[in-house]
Length: 182
Image (cartoon, rainbow, N blue to C red; front, top):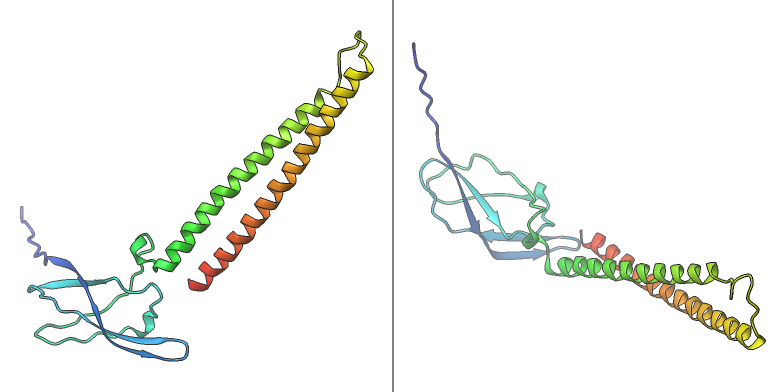
């Protein structure tokens, strides 16, 4: 039986941070020159640059180097799972949207509670049963209670609607800002 031997070339990965050495600002974009100083071992090495902006134009990436090595190619990959990749202003906006979504859900639940209380009051309008006669004072007291409580509920529902509307408007503005930054 003959055995086959395969030579496996170890391909290593090395991450490196770069520092900005030059910036040229144009009307709608900027050209940023970065520099990396690192040591690479013999063999194939994938050099991974981290900390770059998520808004980089991958068609404009150029790589050059000094030393005794050969650049075989370049590739651009966006790490969408890395929260460090988000600009701080974008992270703040997204955190604000999450907070407002929670606030909106809380206000919706408050409104649901008010709706259920209103339904309970309306479902239990029969006062004193079929065989019991109520005095005018008792009847007036119950009518006053229903009117006062239903009025309170209606006012609270309107306030909840206003809060929800304001929260949703704020979330929409924040989302538009996130879309603009993306």
